[in-house]
Image (tube, rainbow, N blue to C red; front, side, top):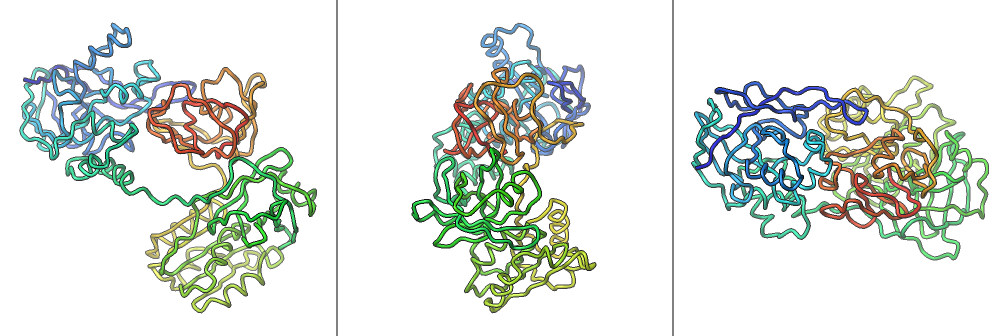
Length: 548
C-alpha cells in the first residue's frame, strides 16, 4: 500500500539568485505530527507565485521516494532530502506512470483528487542547484503532480494512502505531462484529456489550443531582410511623413493583413513601423520624427534610395465579422487603424473612428480619413485636439453611445491604451485589441524588486561574435561567449524578457526571429515553429535580429 513518508511545508521567502531576488515557496522541510490539509494548502505552507502555483487546483504537490532514488543515482547526489523538490507530500508509491488525473485518494482524515502534473518552473532547478532539472523532469517522465483537497482533514507522515476513485479515461500523470510538453502528440489522446473533468482549467485550455490552434495572422513573406525602393516621400503633418516602398524590379509584394507592420533597417539600426496603406504598387509606412532612425528617414532618405525591410508581421489585425468596429488612435498610432479603415471600404459594418492628437497641424491623413469615412454608410468620425482642451478619455467615450457588441482596435502611447481599455471595459465592450511596438511586458515569475531600465550595452568587454539586434528595444550588441544563451545576453542589456523554465520546455520565451539563425544548447524538448527561437537555450549561429 502507498504511504505518506514525509509531510513538508514552508512559507514563501525572498531568495537571492543570479543578482536578483526571487520570492518563492520552493523551500519545504519535513514536519512532525499532524497538519490540516485545507482547500488552498497545508497548514504552515504557502506558495510564492500564485500565478503558476497554488490555488485550489494546486493545493498540494506530491513527489515519490522512487523518483528521489532515481535522481540520486542520475545526478550523483547523496544530499537529496525529502522536500528538496518542493513537494508537500513525499510518498512511497503513486508513481507518475501509474497515477491518473482524476484519481482520488484518502490520506489520514482528508480526501484529495489528482488535478495536473507539476508546473515546469526554474525554481526547482534553483533549489537543487541543477539548472537543467525542469527539462529533465519532463524528459524522464518524472514530474510529480498536484492534488486538490476535496475534504479537509488532518494528515501526518506514516498515513496510508488509499485510492477511493479512478479518473476518467485513466490517463496517467506522465502521459498528460508529455502530451503538453513533448512533440508528436496523439489527437485522440488530446481529445480524451479535455474530457477529464478533474484536469485543471489551465491544462484543459492548453490542450484545447493544441486541438484548435488559433489562426496565425502571418503573411506569406520572405526570409530576413530584402531591399525595397523608396518611390515617394509625402509629408502628412508637421511631424509625420509617409514613405512609399516597392520592389526594385517591379515584382508584386505579398499582401499584408490590415494592422501589420514592417521592420526596417536604416542607418545601421532596426525599427518597426505600421503599414498605413497597401496597394498594387507597394507598401506605405508613415513615420513620426522622434528619434535617431526616424530623423534619418525624415532628413536623409531620398526617392530612389533602398531600405532593407523584413516581411510584414504582427497579430494586431482586423478580424472579419459583422460586428461594429471602433478604431481608436492617438498621434502616430493612427497608422495601423488607418490601414484597417481602408480595408473596411465597401463594408456594411458600423464603424466608429476616434482619433486624438495635439493640434490640427499635427493631424495627419485628415483628407484621406474624411473620404474613407464618407464612403462608409454606417460611419461616425470624432477627432479630439488636446491643445483646444478636447480629450479622448472615459468621459468622451461615455458621451458617444458606442455599441457594446463592438470590436475595438486601438494604438497609441501605453498610457492612452491603458486608459482606453479601462474605459471600454466600463462601457461593456470586451473585445478589445491593441498594438504595442515597444518591448512586450516582461514575464519573469517570482522575481521581485526589479526596476525597469532603458536597454543598454552589457557591462564588460565588447564581444567579437555575431551582431544581435533586439528590434523592439532598439539596440545591437556583439555576442560574447561568456553568455550561456541569448536570454542571458538580453538580461545583461536590461531588455525585457519572458521566461519560466529557462530550459526549453515551457516555450514562454519563444521569440520571432526576423533574420539570422540560432543553434540550441541544450536542445529543446520540442523545437519552436520556423521563424521563432527559444532564447533561453539558444545561441546565435550568425548575425541575428530578434523581435525583443
